[in-house]
Image 1: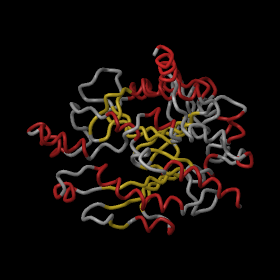
Image 2: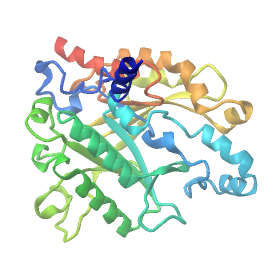
Image 3: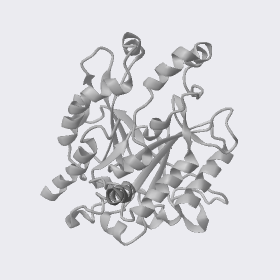
Length: 356
């Protein structure tokens, strides 16, 4: 009895390795010099919604009517809001383990929250704090020294200038030399030139993007410890450097097929395109619902609406091709990333680069 029990105890501490946990470092050597903006990279849409707070107030950026309904009928309003706000079930470490390398982080400060406590938000706020989550990502990177993680930080609801500086300070302190260095960007546009070969000879780069309402910036350490780029003016304090992102719906011929009904009234399959001219390109594929659909399907949720349609999304993903062309994809971000072969399908697109 004692022998098997001891063996069981020893195996219980072991964690099964995910097949995509180190996919970047395991790419074919012929792809080691391909820059990130030419690779196919899986991402998660609204990364942190797995930990939305059931007791959280409605976001200040939501409609006044919804916030009033939540105050008047919280027992009815809040469960409905939560059902249609959750886009992920895996936590951030599990997402990274499954192969996700683009994290969609929507940062906010609650109106009545503690002074330096920053949360994530998607209609309601998360239980997780930004500083703790960034630390968790940093710890994961330390265990995976040849992988690259792209952090797309946006929204910034309720952040004052002091809180912005606090956030920048957290990023610099937590990630340190993991941040994508200034020297790996093109002089003409600041596009990240990190490649698999570069990752093998330096600490894990963490590329941070800061954006809101179609604006974003690459955060990279510069001389004197100031976060800026060649377009920014000299500053005596940390600042965000700005690079314009274009948000387009059905902007290119190759993506129009996604703008069709999902088969049930009111839900629509959409492709959200987020591009940096000459740089990273993010395609967010996710089902969106309208109020009429929600009212007509009171027992449903975003998850119940999405899961039956994953085969359609998977079929579209497999038709894409990464690379430098105008119709090529780069980052593809989806909902419920651990539910099917989405991540593996996006990674597998990199094999098409070997055919060129």
